[in-house]
Length: 490
Image 1 (spheres, rainbow, N blue to C red):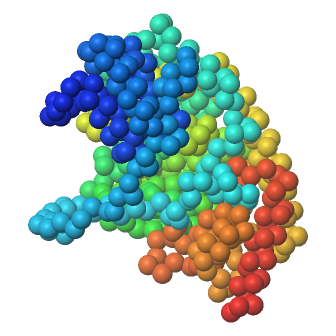
Image 2: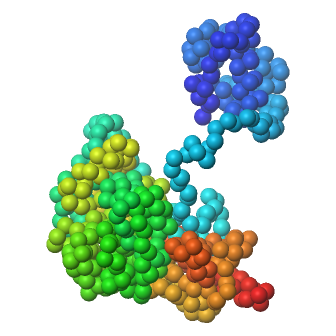
Image 3: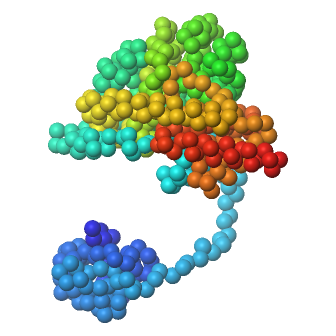
């Protein structure tokens, strides 16, 4: 592909003939590093049309640049940036400036990152990728996804892709969620009780903004999803962490002043504990008795390869106290950023108004593509394929952990894509995680999931969503060896 002709423009402040100005324009692009060796320039005809000059003027400018070794001509293929073109200078950083703004006073609100351990952007290059939430290209159906995306680009769907929905959503996607997705979780909802969001995290943010303020109390699980804790801290609410046990959040531990409870009953994040049916009913009874709301993040309910999943809290709710959060980003791929909220119409109305004031609505083309992917059956096929693969990997991981004597600290009753572990006392898994990178191993330390100022350091999470089964025993062995080495060093 040639360099886009739109990249070029003649600076009206430059002097000289048109030919000289065109030469300068191209040379400056090369010297600035915008055009690199081997890249093809637009043809003289296209460049002339774009700049509004004669073709011979452009041809003469190109010829001069070839003579100066900025460009090279390859017969009928056109003009290319020469391999011998001058290298862009190695610029130093911007010189110090006298910034007169007192940013400690100018910033009204502070938003510290709270996503936990930094994951390397080149995670796929690591041989043992035990990190959560990354897509496995060997499982994802990219061919049918591409076909659905192309279908959504068609003339029939032109309006769905290009229109401004204002505060609305793609009607086909909402209809599918209403008729197919939610009934599988025992949930019946009308279109005015559903809102499409930019992933589950955006959905959680909307609930916090609508339901909480500085006088209200939110309960979170401890440990929990670090970004949720950050969202609630930004809402300025009173935050009350409750330690979970092997069955998730204990309702009896909730304080009487509770206004909103955030819970992941299907697969607790990060331990994968599953809340049993009796406890779910007890939590709903407590919500009705003490007049609070529940935000249910139905985390990984699709990954149920051991037993059938428990009914969602929302399906058991008879009093309109549960707001349900679902996500396609977790089950398809994280870069999709598409989820949904389900709740009483009065709540959805406010959440919709807030979303419209911030981002209007998620992109129409993405919504329609997902709608086709769901309605044509590709999503269900992907879930079956992924569930089988995760089940096989989980068996391999359980055997490898047992062989190496590593201790599992959390057990999900229905599957999932990760395991919560506890290292021996005194092991700092944050240091362990960074040490393991040099061996090609990625793990997630557990400290960021806890609310305490001095969280326990021994916990860590291993995911099997993106690592092939044959590599799992090798990776587990490296983790076990690193832990033993740390124990010896101490």
